[in-house]
Length: 222
Image (cartoon, rainbow, N blue to C red):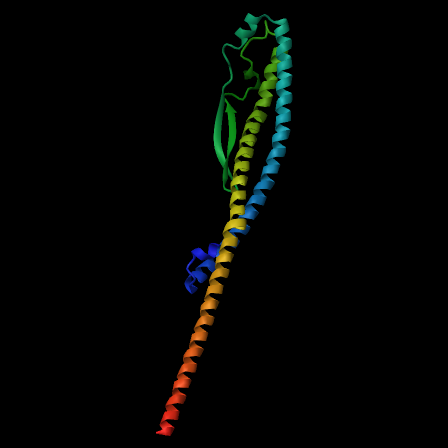
């Protein structure tokens, strides 16, 4: 029994009651945090599903166009077309706080804003299907970065939800019941001690009255 490991004093009882109030308040706050994390997590999962569908469609379209381009172009021409990339992409990574979880935010910019700078080859010896494939990949890049951002956020939120859930369970099923049991134990011990003290006082009073009666009796007889 947990109560056997505590000192049954009024000071300990006061401290335990104060800790119990704090634990109950913390339990409520953690449950609220867990519920909000779950809401945010479910929203992220929906975003992740939509983004993944778009990205997979874009990649499938690009692959299809690459296959068509390879069917009508020589391998040497196709390899030469991608030897020297023309456009450059710069990635910035920042963080956003969501319920005390620092999730990543990806932003990017290109060296130039000209949409035609994605083509690093001339159009004389290449297929229009190759242009479509490159354009498909360029168009899907923002969604790919967003997908990576959202998937990482889902992983981090899931880990935080699990950690918060363990804390809620520890408070709800271990700490708070143990504190209540200790408070009950100390209260019973203090009540028992108080009853014992009252019994001793009553016995002392009876003995004093008996002694006073004997003294009065002897005084009267003398």
